[in-house]
Image (tube, rainbow, N blue to C red; front, side, top):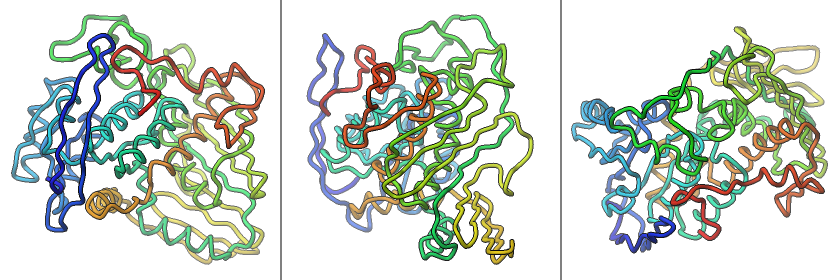
Length: 428
């Protein structure tokens, strides 16, 4: 357990179902192990948990999922790695009241990322939260506020920030090797499967459907809403621009050295996934302008392409006056004038450096490689692109007010009302 932190659950307000915590924290001694809870053990959580369990300075003491029927088998899997069995918990609030837990790893569907992070900070826990950080812009801002108010380490799961070949390439880019870089392209070329309609049905035994829905509007149980389909519905997900696209938008923004755009313009449609339940576009072309820095960022997405572009399935290309630099998860390439290939490296990709960086920062108090504020700026690009698609026009963004200029419809989509005990708090 980190330091002599004493955390206590204060109260639940019965009428609103709102939970608050008080925390008093201290840094861990270097010899101590960080006690983690994995929140959401399907999908991304099943990938993160084994790597966290294998870190010498971390141990998974709790696992949390609304579907308690899968916790037993998952706990055994973790026990085989770290030689101790994590405690299964169905309701995150029970984890947050446990003084032995130092940090939570949020690998839930997107619509739960913000509230879990805010609650975690309020309870004195450090947080590793998967991308995109939020379902909407307001949630992201509240996550930053909570991290700062409670002085918690919040690492966003854009793992490339900690990967050596990305760091090497961005350092070379910033050195001026390819001249003045005026433009970058982030692209997402994948072959996704479609999600056909299925009828609503009874809630499966062992699943708390109310908690799963969390801040989202209340709906009947539907297997496609609960499983793969949620990612392509606005109530829960942000499409692939907010999923895999955020990784590449983050690298593009990092390399360009930009923060908030003044304009976002999306041309998008459903071209391949027609006649299914998916609400998000499968094809997008988004342009972001950063006039103060003299930069343009372009995002391209095709979810029906069984081939790569620029050498990578997902990647970023930086275009400079003296050459270009292309980078993806499996390598990077530098091409100078007259198309002379100077660097062409192939590498292996691993999440482990990013997870280690989080554990190290929880012990030292340093800002992690992708602090929540950096994650907010990159996720914001996905939100702006999606909102331009949804309202069907270019949007002008006020970076200081963090809202759109003269567009009430678009501004109404920056937040949502929330639901009962799962409402995102106005004051964290």
